[in-house]
Image 1 (cartoon, one colour):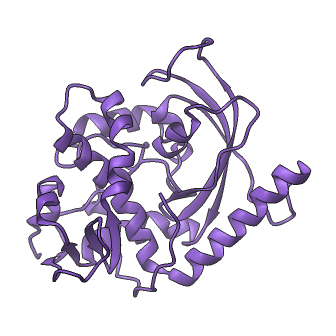
Image 2 (cartoon, rainbow, N blue to C red):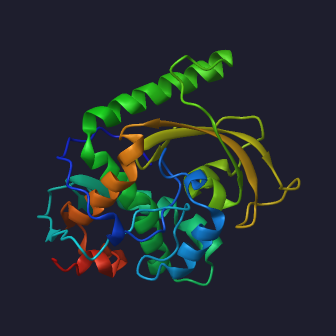
Length: 272
């Protein structure tokens, strides 16, 4: 997803933890599968009905306990190609479409509307919500991630302020959809581009795969990666902050033709 500068939004209050479903995918430093056991993850995947298809083992899910007003943006408010906006941050159609082939590979029996809804709910909307919270920290993390990755590619040495590696092994469930998608076409031993994820900018080294020569990636493809996350939200609170942003920041419908892919729980929240 393309990097752009975002404006700062106030941090919304975090809803009670008891209101949050246990299904979250692995994008940023607090979204990794190392913090959620595989058995618990699979149980959560099976039980997530309103926002199905937890992409990486932990994507934020809207809850019915706090209001998120649904608005319709006036024509010309956002750039062409914008589908939605959350907290003033555009959600681009191209960003949703980017993950459509991967969602189709994982769930080939679903229609495209359902696949787009999964991409929005589990990847694109959490990223936009994270960006809405702190534009200055977001930009600083982007610059730091670019600098660290460039130093590694040029010298093979990580700078002193580089994040520690997170070693992940397994399918998309274990390594996360953002790295899994980026790994397509990569050779073992190479580094990914800098990737945007909820609460962090991420890059990784592909260590190994179980693919045979000429074999295409599939949902059972297994990877071994060394993942590096440069956070722009506090690691210890990033899950709660992004969850709260999804729950409380205004969601604007920019293109009404795309409204059917918005998860119903975001459209019909009850105030309690």
